[in-house]
Length: 240
Image (cartoon, rainbow, N blue to C red; front, side, top):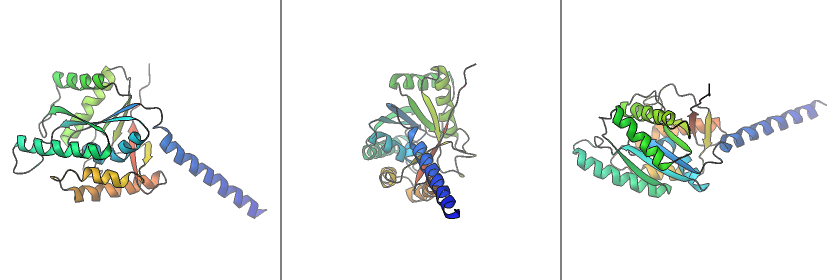
Protein backbone atom coordinates (compact mmCIF):
# COMPACT_ATOMS: atom_id res chain seq x y z
CA UNK A 1 0.00 0.00 0.00
CA UNK A 2 2.85 2.37 0.88
CA UNK A 3 4.48 1.61 -2.47
CA UNK A 4 1.26 2.47 -4.33
CA UNK A 5 0.86 5.74 -2.41
CA UNK A 6 4.48 6.68 -3.11
CA UNK A 7 4.05 5.88 -6.81
CA UNK A 8 0.92 8.03 -6.98
CA UNK A 9 2.77 10.85 -5.21
CA UNK A 10 5.60 10.69 -7.77
CA UNK A 11 3.08 10.76 -10.65
CA UNK A 12 1.35 13.82 -9.18
CA UNK A 13 4.69 15.61 -8.73
CA UNK A 14 5.72 14.81 -12.30
CA UNK A 15 2.40 15.99 -13.69
CA UNK A 16 2.65 19.22 -11.72
CA UNK A 17 6.20 19.74 -12.95
CA UNK A 18 5.14 19.14 -16.56
CA UNK A 19 2.28 21.62 -16.17
CA UNK A 20 4.70 24.23 -14.84
CA UNK A 21 7.07 23.69 -17.78
CA UNK A 22 4.22 24.05 -20.28
CA UNK A 23 2.97 27.17 -18.51
CA UNK A 24 6.44 28.67 -18.83
CA UNK A 25 6.05 28.54 -22.62
CA UNK A 26 2.29 28.98 -23.13
CA UNK A 27 2.31 32.72 -22.44
CA UNK A 28 4.23 33.28 -25.69
CA UNK A 29 1.39 31.87 -27.78
CA UNK A 30 -0.93 34.18 -29.67
CA UNK A 31 1.45 37.07 -30.27
CA UNK A 32 1.93 38.27 -33.84
CA UNK A 33 4.51 41.05 -33.53
CA UNK A 34 7.06 41.76 -30.79
CA UNK A 35 9.35 44.75 -30.28
CA UNK A 36 12.41 44.36 -28.06
CA UNK A 37 13.60 47.86 -27.15
CA UNK A 38 17.12 47.95 -25.73
CA UNK A 39 19.19 50.98 -24.80
CA UNK A 40 22.33 50.02 -26.74
CA UNK A 41 23.45 47.67 -29.48
CA UNK A 42 23.80 44.26 -27.74
CA UNK A 43 21.11 44.93 -25.09
CA UNK A 44 18.20 43.23 -26.91
CA UNK A 45 20.41 40.24 -27.79
CA UNK A 46 21.75 39.72 -24.28
CA UNK A 47 18.49 40.52 -22.51
CA UNK A 48 16.29 38.13 -24.44
CA UNK A 49 17.98 36.88 -27.61
CA UNK A 50 16.85 33.33 -26.91
CA UNK A 51 13.23 34.40 -26.58
CA UNK A 52 13.52 36.50 -29.75
CA UNK A 53 14.78 33.46 -31.66
CA UNK A 54 12.08 31.23 -30.18
CA UNK A 55 9.35 33.72 -31.10
CA UNK A 56 10.66 33.96 -34.65
CA UNK A 57 10.65 30.14 -34.85
CA UNK A 58 6.98 30.29 -33.80
CA UNK A 59 6.22 32.54 -36.78
CA UNK A 60 6.11 35.81 -34.85
CA UNK A 61 7.50 39.00 -36.41
CA UNK A 62 10.30 40.23 -34.14
CA UNK A 63 11.89 43.68 -34.27
CA UNK A 64 15.06 44.61 -32.38
CA UNK A 65 14.89 48.31 -31.53
CA UNK A 66 18.08 50.11 -30.52
CA UNK A 67 17.39 53.23 -28.43
CA UNK A 68 20.91 54.53 -29.16
CA UNK A 69 23.58 53.53 -31.66
CA UNK A 70 26.30 52.98 -29.05
CA UNK A 71 28.02 56.31 -29.74
CA UNK A 72 30.00 56.24 -26.48
CA UNK A 73 30.65 52.52 -26.49
CA UNK A 74 34.17 52.24 -27.91
CA UNK A 75 37.03 53.96 -26.06
CA UNK A 76 39.24 56.01 -28.35
CA UNK A 77 36.63 56.31 -31.08
CA UNK A 78 34.54 59.35 -31.95
CA UNK A 79 30.77 59.14 -31.61
CA UNK A 80 30.46 58.86 -35.38
CA UNK A 81 33.04 56.06 -35.59
CA UNK A 82 31.50 54.14 -32.70
CA UNK A 83 28.00 54.54 -34.10
CA UNK A 84 29.06 53.20 -37.49
CA UNK A 85 30.82 50.18 -35.98
CA UNK A 86 28.14 49.31 -33.47
CA UNK A 87 25.28 49.76 -35.91
CA UNK A 88 26.95 47.32 -38.30
CA UNK A 89 27.46 44.84 -35.44
CA UNK A 90 23.79 45.12 -34.43
CA UNK A 91 22.63 44.48 -37.99
CA UNK A 92 24.84 41.40 -38.18
CA UNK A 93 23.46 40.14 -34.85
CA UNK A 94 19.92 40.61 -36.13
CA UNK A 95 20.76 38.58 -39.22
CA UNK A 96 21.91 35.75 -36.96
CA UNK A 97 18.62 35.88 -35.04
CA UNK A 98 16.50 36.38 -38.15
CA UNK A 99 14.92 39.61 -36.90
CA UNK A 100 14.64 43.18 -38.19
CA UNK A 101 16.71 46.05 -36.74
CA UNK A 102 15.40 49.56 -36.06
CA UNK A 103 17.53 52.43 -34.73
CA UNK A 104 16.22 55.37 -32.75
CA UNK A 105 17.92 58.76 -32.35
CA UNK A 106 19.00 58.97 -28.70
CA UNK A 107 22.73 59.35 -27.91
CA UNK A 108 24.58 56.75 -25.86
CA UNK A 109 25.50 58.22 -22.47
CA UNK A 110 23.40 61.34 -23.06
CA UNK A 111 19.84 59.99 -23.29
CA UNK A 112 16.98 62.33 -22.47
CA UNK A 113 13.51 62.40 -21.00
CA UNK A 114 11.47 65.31 -22.28
CA UNK A 115 8.27 66.01 -24.18
CA UNK A 116 9.85 65.38 -27.58
CA UNK A 117 11.41 62.09 -26.48
CA UNK A 118 8.12 60.86 -25.03
CA UNK A 119 6.49 61.64 -28.38
CA UNK A 120 9.26 59.91 -30.33
CA UNK A 121 8.86 56.64 -28.44
CA UNK A 122 5.08 56.72 -28.71
CA UNK A 123 5.30 57.40 -32.45
CA UNK A 124 7.67 54.48 -33.02
CA UNK A 125 5.45 52.03 -31.17
CA UNK A 126 2.30 53.30 -32.89
CA UNK A 127 3.98 52.93 -36.28
CA UNK A 128 5.12 49.36 -35.58
CA UNK A 129 1.84 48.28 -33.90
CA UNK A 130 3.22 45.42 -31.77
CA UNK A 131 1.10 43.30 -29.47
CA UNK A 132 4.08 42.74 -27.15
CA UNK A 133 6.99 44.97 -26.15
CA UNK A 134 9.99 43.87 -24.07
CA UNK A 135 12.32 46.46 -22.56
CA UNK A 136 14.65 47.03 -19.61
CA UNK A 137 13.53 46.58 -16.02
CA UNK A 138 13.45 50.20 -14.75
CA UNK A 139 15.55 49.67 -11.62
CA UNK A 140 19.01 49.55 -13.17
CA UNK A 141 22.42 51.02 -12.48
CA UNK A 142 22.74 52.30 -16.06
CA UNK A 143 20.96 55.61 -16.69
CA UNK A 144 20.31 54.83 -20.36
CA UNK A 145 18.53 51.63 -19.37
CA UNK A 146 16.33 53.48 -16.88
CA UNK A 147 15.42 56.21 -19.35
CA UNK A 148 14.62 53.72 -22.11
CA UNK A 149 12.33 51.80 -19.74
CA UNK A 150 10.49 54.92 -18.55
CA UNK A 151 9.82 56.13 -22.10
CA UNK A 152 8.46 52.72 -23.12
CA UNK A 153 6.25 52.57 -20.03
CA UNK A 154 4.85 56.02 -20.78
CA UNK A 155 4.14 55.03 -24.39
CA UNK A 156 2.26 51.96 -23.10
CA UNK A 157 0.04 54.24 -21.02
CA UNK A 158 -0.40 56.87 -23.73
CA UNK A 159 -1.40 54.29 -26.34
CA UNK A 160 -4.13 52.95 -24.08
CA UNK A 161 -2.34 49.80 -22.87
CA UNK A 162 -2.89 48.23 -26.28
CA UNK A 163 0.14 45.94 -26.11
CA UNK A 164 1.52 43.64 -23.43
CA UNK A 165 4.57 45.12 -21.71
CA UNK A 166 7.32 42.93 -20.29
CA UNK A 167 10.62 43.80 -18.64
CA UNK A 168 13.82 41.79 -19.06
CA UNK A 169 17.15 41.70 -17.25
CA UNK A 170 20.76 42.46 -18.23
CA UNK A 171 23.82 41.59 -16.14
CA UNK A 172 21.65 41.22 -13.04
CA UNK A 173 23.38 42.37 -9.88
CA UNK A 174 25.69 44.72 -11.76
CA UNK A 175 23.05 46.50 -13.85
CA UNK A 176 19.51 45.12 -13.34
CA UNK A 177 18.57 45.35 -9.64
CA UNK A 178 15.85 43.73 -7.44
CA UNK A 179 14.43 41.72 -10.36
CA UNK A 180 11.74 39.19 -9.40
CA UNK A 181 10.40 37.54 -12.56
CA UNK A 182 6.94 36.08 -13.07
CA UNK A 183 7.36 34.71 -16.61
CA UNK A 184 10.02 32.35 -17.98
CA UNK A 185 11.15 30.97 -21.33
CA UNK A 186 13.25 27.82 -21.73
CA UNK A 187 15.96 28.81 -24.24
CA UNK A 188 18.08 25.67 -24.03
CA UNK A 189 17.70 24.99 -27.77
CA UNK A 190 18.24 28.65 -28.66
CA UNK A 191 21.16 29.38 -26.34
CA UNK A 192 24.01 28.74 -28.76
CA UNK A 193 22.41 30.88 -31.47
CA UNK A 194 21.84 33.66 -28.92
CA UNK A 195 25.52 33.59 -27.96
CA UNK A 196 26.52 33.67 -31.64
CA UNK A 197 24.31 36.74 -32.09
CA UNK A 198 25.71 38.79 -29.26
CA UNK A 199 29.29 37.85 -30.14
CA UNK A 200 28.70 39.81 -33.35
CA UNK A 201 29.38 42.83 -31.13
CA UNK A 202 33.12 42.39 -31.49
CA UNK A 203 33.86 45.91 -30.23
CA UNK A 204 32.54 44.94 -26.78
CA UNK A 205 33.97 42.65 -24.10
CA UNK A 206 31.63 39.78 -24.82
CA UNK A 207 33.44 37.09 -22.77
CA UNK A 208 32.68 39.16 -19.65
CA UNK A 209 29.08 39.65 -20.76
CA UNK A 210 28.75 35.92 -21.39
CA UNK A 211 30.08 35.12 -17.93
CA UNK A 212 27.30 37.21 -16.38
CA UNK A 213 24.54 36.01 -18.68
CA UNK A 214 25.41 32.32 -18.62
CA UNK A 215 25.10 32.40 -14.82
CA UNK A 216 21.74 34.21 -15.10
CA UNK A 217 20.46 31.85 -17.77
CA UNK A 218 21.45 28.76 -15.80
CA UNK A 219 19.49 30.09 -12.81
CA UNK A 220 16.46 30.99 -14.95
CA UNK A 221 16.74 27.61 -16.65
CA UNK A 222 16.54 25.87 -13.29
CA UNK A 223 13.43 27.92 -12.50
CA UNK A 224 11.67 26.68 -15.66
CA UNK A 225 13.15 23.16 -15.70
CA UNK A 226 15.63 23.71 -18.52
CA UNK A 227 19.38 24.08 -18.90
CA UNK A 228 19.11 27.75 -19.91
CA UNK A 229 16.27 30.21 -19.48
CA UNK A 230 15.31 33.85 -19.73
CA UNK A 231 12.93 35.59 -17.35
CA UNK A 232 10.57 38.54 -17.46
CA UNK A 233 8.20 40.66 -15.42
CA UNK A 234 4.85 41.44 -16.99
CA UNK A 235 3.55 44.95 -16.32
CA UNK A 236 -0.02 44.73 -15.03
CA UNK A 237 -2.79 47.29 -15.30
CA UNK A 238 -6.16 47.05 -13.60
CA UNK A 239 -8.97 49.18 -14.98
CA UNK A 240 -10.74 51.34 -12.41
